[in-house]
Length: 402
Image (cartoon, rainbow, N blue to C red):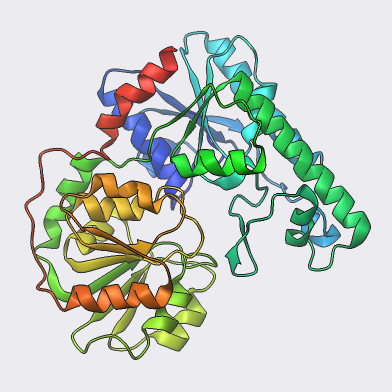
């Protein structure tokens, strides 16, 4: 496994995905190493990220900005240069060891496959819209971006790019997409939702995705169920929002829309940290709205199990939200917007109507008020769940072998 998101003291969704899959594969009898950033590595890197195997320092990822923010345009050479750096490190290590059946890349440089040694069985998983968008989010000006022209992307590098910056950024994005398209045609690719596959084809409609497969994001259901045992029965009125408090995640929009509309018994718990936390906490913290900051997985699982309802208010298009999967796995009602990969996750409901999707934030708050008017129900957890990593492993191993 290879990812530039590892190691780290606090893991995001992509990094957790890698560790979850790696540990589960090892439990199933496979040998797995994880390669990541050498500039963050230390003797206890594997322990820090909760990995049961060996962590391999692979590449230095400091000074990755290349002054793009100061210059106001995307550099055409930057991302291919770093992709080649990652590819060179993983190729040298894999060929030196000589006994890896597959190298599985989970990262932000989708063209890396162009630069790996052809002798390797290279697979990558696409976790976000970074297959065609250099910012990975397709979110601009507080709204979902629907542009397909590479030159339009210049506005994400500079507020008023002008003809020269537009030309340079457009060339950078066109090269980025071209190299990604060629990589997908050459190597096996997993998309964590069909939404991501469709989005790539919207930008590059003639791309060859015959070597790709959709395998949804997953969680370790067995572990989650054990962690949730400390949560107790659901508390009437407790509403949980968990995630990075940042632009696109919808915390600000939700709190603004919910202000004055929450029933008296509601208690909103906001779990997470991020650049918008201080401002939102200063504006909205009250007896009804509490900001708990970052919490370890054990505490988040317990809070999820103990909540009347979970809300995932992202206004950007979530590819395949882990927070939604965890709420569904623990039998909690979950509310989200009908965007991105969210509609696909209804297949993991443990009862009809568990996942309620809204077309707008006011409608989402209306769903919340309706849900809080119903009794908080404790539901027995099933022995297995469709979003469990152990359900995904046979599909992934089969793809490795193709």
